[in-house]
Length: 235
Image 1 (cartoon, one colour):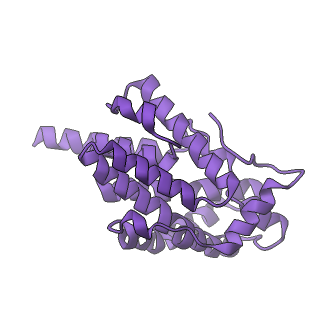
Image 2 (image 1 turned 60 degrees about the vertical axis):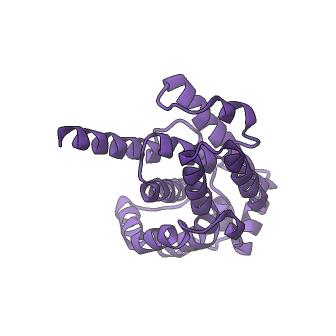
């Protein structure tokens, strides 16, 4: 019993660490187009942000990131490097916005480098040599499997992390109280759970990312002369 509790505790603490803003992979540095929404006056309060976050989760994160993480997790069970490479390539093709694509790649490489430096995970050497793009979700799926984090928890970890990163960005862009933040997080729980449950068992042929509004704002942000957030993340 004690060993089981120790294992479960280790898995839980690892998932918390992967979702924490202290994780030095640079995801905090990108607003994923949110800055353009604020500059255009489309969102300026917590209600607007909550509804926009639902769109991000349902149409951007859920049908691409969740499927990628889940598929990589399963492929890692079989040590199927070729499958992982295929998933990494497929995910890359769904990232239309250059800023989103480069942010994902840089954060993924940072997370992989971090795993090497800390020696926390036993990743196969082929991952370092063969992974074509090293997207963040790909590395997260591998690491979560190695750490024996449950697949659904790995997906929830990523969605929660993505959501808090955008909320953190919003706090730097317009007035948003800590109470507002907690209300948003609480109100979005059903959307988070549904996003994961609906997509976790889908295959990579169903992977997609289609949200024109967010795509346009992401592309617009790339071309802004003055901006608070970078067009990519870095370590």
